[in-house]
Image 1: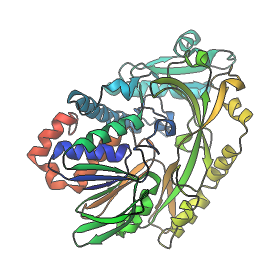
Image 2: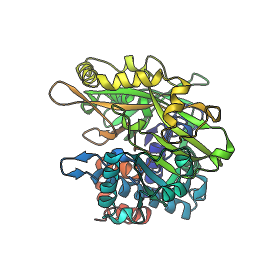
Image 3: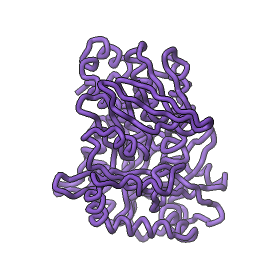
Image 4: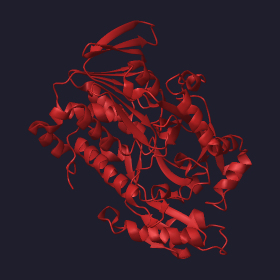
Length: 462
């Protein structure tokens, strides 16, 4: 088995495979010198244990009211992630949980009559599910001040406000988690994790896949053959998938979006906030740009971030090439890319506007959440990149999709993960889906079912 990329997705799949079949030979190739240095790294993502508690874009309005189906599904998926992590901690495969996951309350915050009514209805529907047991709703300013004092400091009383509060929210350092998983995997007999190795080509040879790999330090090249390949290379996944030549890869395009944070550098301010507070997205903003004022724990230190601010880029990875986007366009997806570009002109315009924001304008946006924020307490922090999927609509055009998608060959011998949020939080359920599609006979075997029941007890539960 060959896994390409050493982020949270490959780490999750590698650990699951190792736990389900300890006799499997697994090799992980990572082009950088450190695991989880791109999308999984703590500075490059929100670190939110996405569970639907606070993300308002997961509960959009519909003709019949607020649609909570996506939030409920994501909450169930995140619970599966927690189950696996807890099991791996119990068995000593991972270090104690506080090193990568901490309890940080999740909040939604809105202002104005329309948004308050929306949040009230959202709360009423979500709390009908046991997954949202313990969520609290309030329009009381004193209560909201207790939950998030920074957000009420200097706030005008002329607009109604409301918030929901979930005490059992989580802040997850996916970089630390992925590196711990890779460390465990690399220590196992029959498994190897090779850093600084870039996959340059993928070719079908009969029933096997030939993977050409280059050592970036020495320049040495070699080839390996394997019956199964997983491509979890972040923004580079689409390019590698296209090299495989499988028909399922045709018609896909990619739309990269960059990100930035405002990072608080005043310890006194950081100490006064202990929550992840999400609000409503700006009109035309992509889901990854939903604003939030976040307590984070990175390398054992409490941080406070606001953002992210989106931007336009042509790179597919933070440590990628400015030619990535151009290189991804070919005859097979040109029409798809052009059609999606025309359909999403307003999004492109929004991203350009975000990229051109001055520091003062960024702080002005922060003050919608923290009215008393001072310019000198904040600095710009570069975040990671997200490559959104552009997919053929089956009619000759293309549509931009936000989310994650698993693409597999017809025989299940190669698979790739494309897309972005909420991928990291739902990595376990995504990889379980992949296992079911790529290894159907083993998935149905009594041995795998028994092992899965111990690793992820809710797997298969109604």
